[in-house]
Every structure is written in C-alpha cells, then in structure tokens.
Length: 117
Image 1 (cartoon, rainbow, N blue to C red):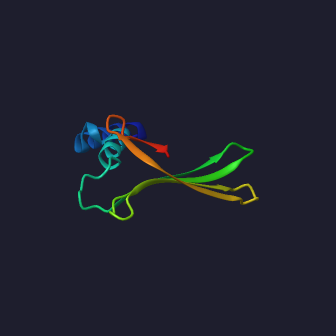
Image 2: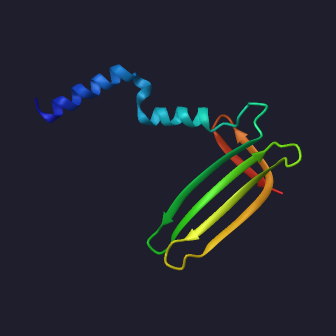
Image 3: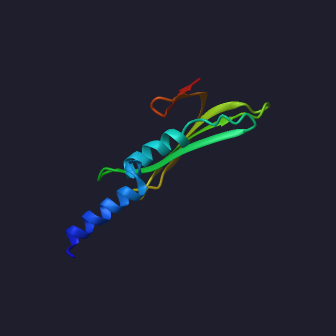
C-alpha cells in the first residue's frame, strides 16, 4: 500500500471514528466557547484568565502576559487587568502595570473587554 492510499484510508477511518466535529479547528472553537466564558458557580470566590505570548519582528523581541481577574470575596471584590512585558533582546527590561476597572464578556464572540477606571 502506498502512502497516499494509507493516508486516505486512515483519514476516512478517523473521520468515521471521531465524527465531523473532530476537526481540530471545530474542537478549538467549541472549547473556547465552552471554557472561556465566565463561571456561573455562585460560590466561586475568584476567576482568573491569562494570555501569554511573544512578539518578535526581527528588531524587537518582547514577551508579554495579560491577566484578568474577577475577585468575588466580599471584602476584596473587584476586577483587575495586569499587563507584564519583558524585553528579550538582551536589555532584559521588565515592566508591569495593574489596572482596576470593569470586565465584560460577549457570549456571542467568546471575548472579554476591559474598561479601566
């Protein structure tokens, strides 16, 4: 059996086994809509989400973390966004800033927005 025939048969088998929703992009979209939304558990005291990454355009090389938190403890209640940046081009400068504000969630697009006070 040649490689092309094997790949065709194995692809058909995988599709039959896992169904049409098993496509990686479909699974990722479903997971994001399901897992990224805010919790509806009334006893949950804190919720936290973050995104980390690296931007390298040939000249600048920067690592970053953006973190959003929703604290629901009665004496500490509030929403914050933390932004951290690290230059990775040898200077190794580190910067961080915290913003207090309001966190909003759009269920249709599974996206958050944050408005600083």
